[in-house]
Every structure is written in structure tokens, then in C-alpha cells.
Amino acid sequence: MQKLSVGLDLGGTKIEIIVLSAENEVLLRKRIATPIAQDHQTPLHQYQAIVQAIKTLIQASELQLQRKFLQVGIGIPGAISPATGLVKNANTTCLIGQNFQQDLEQALDCGVKIANDADCFVLSEALDGAAKGAQSVFGVIIGTGCGGGLVINQQLVSGPNAICGEWGHNPLPWPQADETLLPCYCGKQGCIETFLSGPGFEKQAARHSSVTKNDDNLFSSKEWHQALLAGDKNALAVFDNYARQLAKSLATVINMTDPEVIVLGGGMSNIDFLYQRVPEFLPEYVFSDQVFTRLVKAEFGDSSGVRGAAFL
Ligand SMILES: [Zn+2]
Image (cartoon, rainbow, N blue to C red; front, side):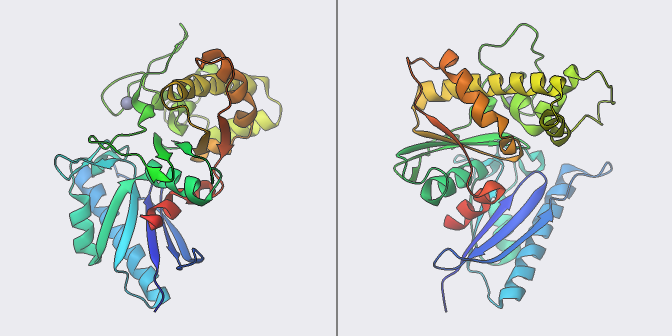
């Protein structure tokens, strides 16, 4: 029987599974919505609903392929604390403090390997994606949250705190006087994530809109992008400002790690304007006479994370 690699990506809005053959052929791919917290529910309810949803997804996939999975790699928007074995730093906050690995191994009756979703993403892109062949790759997810990971010589870099690449919870560098510092789920305010994640972008962009929607009904990043493509001047100003903020934030990463390639993933990475505009801003902020770091879009789009999880 051929060896299968099973990867699962748990995101803020979707859970995706992929099953690869020994030759990395896609044998199966499914996607479901991530259970969200209902008004009357506690975080524990949402956590249990997520475990149950993953169990249902795995069982349906096993049934379809007529195979029992022995090992599943899972990318999560957080990390396993080396000190406690419990989830920390998770943007899907109901995971925080849970023994996710043990709970999943019990629920799925198989081995589970958990890694940070941005680490899975950059591993996939560095091994056979948009940054294939590069010696040093910084991968960035700008989606529901704002994660990152570093691969050097095809190896994920990980340290004693399991936080390598967590640029999203640094403060936005070189802030402008009119920049609004919003609170972040991590307990601080003004984190890069509160500007560059999809929800962060939507909140910040609302300040540039003359049409007022209420706070829970902001224009989505997709609506802003459509306006940009239609030539709307307001949208151009919003994305120009966003590109500058992204360039500033990446400049500090380049100053620290000097990567050959930076790969962008997550929903906001689909905005093509960024690949032209961010490199124009970078030389203003990087401590170098020239910037040779390439900024590229993920080859496997939002499936990179799940591929990387399968490679775990
Ligand atoms: Zn933060």
C-alpha cells in the first residue's frame, strides 16, 4: 500500500485537508468552514466544535480513500508552548491553553503533529513553491492574522520559544502621526497585525471611507480591492498606505534576516498591486544602498499551508 501524507490547515475561517501520494500528487482535498463562536457559547464550546469538525472531516476523508490515516500534520494559527505542551499565541483564541495535540490524537485515533500555520506555509513555498531554490526564505501570511516563518537551507528555523518569524506582534515601525493604534488580541496595541491582517486592514481603511457603515459592517478587503481595480481614488490611497505599512514592516525583517525571497500568502496576498508598490517603498526603509530581496506571491495560494502540514 502506498504511503500517504495527510495535512490539515486550521484557519480562522476554513479548515482544509489534503492527502498527497508518495509523489506529492493530490489524492483528496476538502474544505469546510471553521466553527465560529456563537453569542451564547463559551470559548470551550467553540474549541470542542473545532475538534469535532476536524474529526468529521478526517473520517469522511478516510472513508472516501478507504484508508485509515496513521499520522496527520496540522497547521494551526498559533504554537505549542515548549514549556507546557499547550497552545499559545493563537489568533483563534479558543485554542489558547488547550492540549490540542492530545485531544486530537484521542479524537482521531492516530498520530498528530502540530506546527504553526505560517511555518507550514513557508516550508511548502521554500521546498517546491514560489521560493524553490532560494537559500533563505521569509514567509508571511497576511490573512485573518499576520504570521511568519523562516526557512534557511530548506530547514524551518525554530527556537526555544517556538516563536520564530512572529513579526506580526512587533509594533508598526516608523508610525505616522495620524496612525490609529488599535488593540490587539495579544494584549498590546498597535501591533503590525492590527494594520496588515485582513480584519486590521478593514478597520484601518474605514477611516478613509466617506460612506459610513457601522463598526460590525465594514467594507471588506475584497470590496476595497474591487474599488481599486475600478480606479477609485480613495481605494488607491488606502492601498498605497497599506503597501507603505507592509514595506516598513518587512524592512525590519530584511534588516534582521536579509532573506533572498519573501513569499506572501493569505487573503491579502492576492492583491497584485502590492508586488509592484511594496518594492518601490522598501529602499526608503531597508538599511542598504540597494534591496535585492524578491517579493513574490505564494505559488500554491491558500493551499500552501495545508501542503506544508502534509510535509510535517
Ligand atoms: Zn499583538
